[in-house]
Length: 208
Ligand code: SF4
Ligand SMILES: [Zn+2]
Image (cartoon, rainbow, N blue to C red; front, side, top):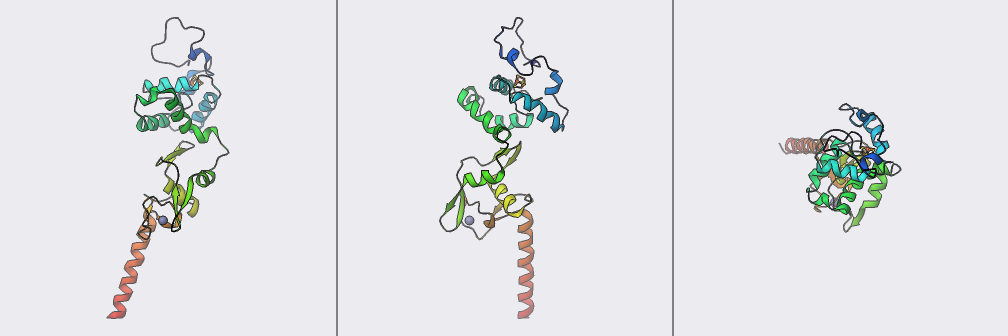
């Protein structure tokens, strides 16, 4: 790529993946947006998504631990997430690397996929009216935002994001359950404690 800052060979061969990059000849600054400029990040990514060097570029950036800029369609945060999830030697495996990159970009490359379709595709009915999550991963990235199955369940059911951690309610004994009615966020847990305390106070008053 044109804004490659590593060991640029003195004489690049015509097949060099950087010369084939869709950003060749464009202003390199476009791949280094200011922090928080999500529109500029998306603009850079959209060029990467049509780039024949995308995987190679992502691989090099992950190997070199590039902290800044958009490389191979991946933002800084997405590369950090991949590096947390995979060990360096795992990313040397081309198949693993491809899975990691396309996994991180899945929803950006499939914009018609919605959170509801992710939910429908990944949940399964468990005995006793509980719901399970088919995929082994404990969280996934949706348009660059990391979300867990329990957070997704809560969001789709309540129509708003959870406050704090989403946990199973004390009434559900199934550890892996993601049934929205068997989950509570921090605010609902607080309300439950308040309601239980009020109910106890009423009972004590009646008994007195
Ligand atoms: S993937 Fe993006 S940053 Fe990398 S070479 Fe292609 S256009 Fe340039
Ligand atoms: Zn349950």
